[in-house]
Image 1 (cartoon, rainbow, N blue to C red):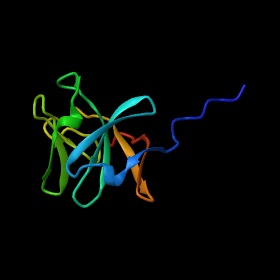
Image 2: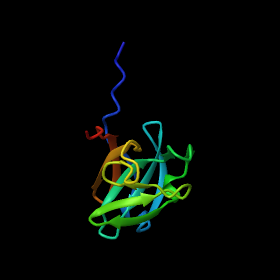
Image 3: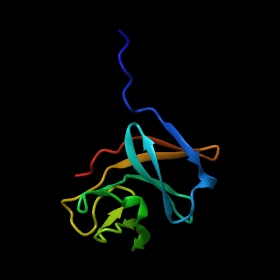
Image 4: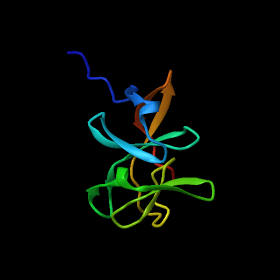
Length: 119
């Protein structure tokens, strides 16, 4: 029996040009609903789409902004801000959403494995 590969491979999702700036698109990646964000400087981030406060899949509908040098998305449900780099909630350090590795290769956005939660 061949072992099933771990979900560490990169999954192509869409072309960078298809993503609107400061908006999110959703995709099913490795069986998870992911919100993919493109910033004005073409940095791309991926977070789990499920808001732990609202208990609903609404992160992709949030407003993108910055607090200092921290890019974030504000959930449309309760307004909690989540760091696009780490998934940590900026308003409640005990809360977070999953953050995923992202790379752009030849104009195509690829989403990798879930990032480890920073201590």
